[in-house]
Amino acid sequence: DTEVTQTPKHLVMGMTNKKSLKCEQHMGHRAMYWYKQKAKKPPELMFVYSYEKLSINESVPSRFSPECPNSSLLNLHLHALQPEDSALYLCASSQELGTATNEKLFFGSGTQLSVL
Amino acid sequence: GNSVTQMEGPVTLSEEAFLTINCTYTATGYPSLFWYVQYPGEGLQLLLKATKADDKGSNKGFEATYRKETTSFHLEKGSVQVSDSAVYFCALKGGQNFVFGPGTRLSVLP
Image 1 (cartoon, chains in turn brown, purple):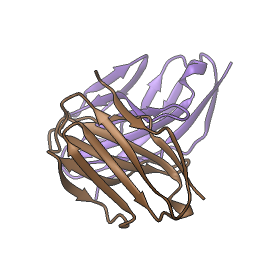
Image 2: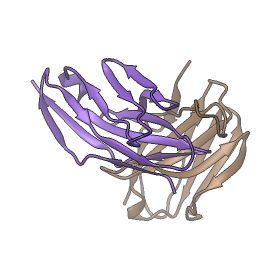
Image 3: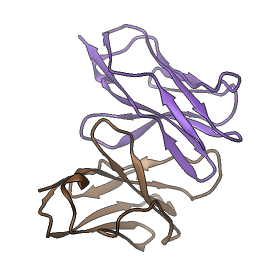
């Protein structure tokens, strides 16, 4: 199994809603990532978990709250979002978070989020 | 810091044409280099990679060679197909972090 599975594929929410994005992988990877991608732009790193601990937080607003319940699952909790947060949210995983030069990222298909 | 620059798109080609997408990078040390492809409505998929100077990555008819002297990793394909229409991202990994280029949109017309 070489897949990263994300749900839901599409999400529309109001600015007062609370919702969660989910990500799952069964490749035994110990590093998991959240990226945000605006239209016609490259992915921007938001958070990285390594061995279920938050390792990198790229100064993301607190209305985004990540959670890693176990080594296979990664959630992104959303609360009080703004319309400018509308984007494709991508989950990714890699074997480790380290300096090995042969590391590569495996991406899910993403959740297309619209905030009204 | 590390950065990746790609040629401006969009690139529009006819089927069976030759493709080159230029990529240059700035990095300290010896990064690994990657090409990722993103089809409409999907996440990024690894297309090919190279981990050291003069390595050639190849997959599905695409090739790229790690050129340390010119800090480049240009993507090439001899004969593109309509199904190759997508956005192509050049990326590097130096240390822990991956850095992506801005992406180049390719449209292949029948």
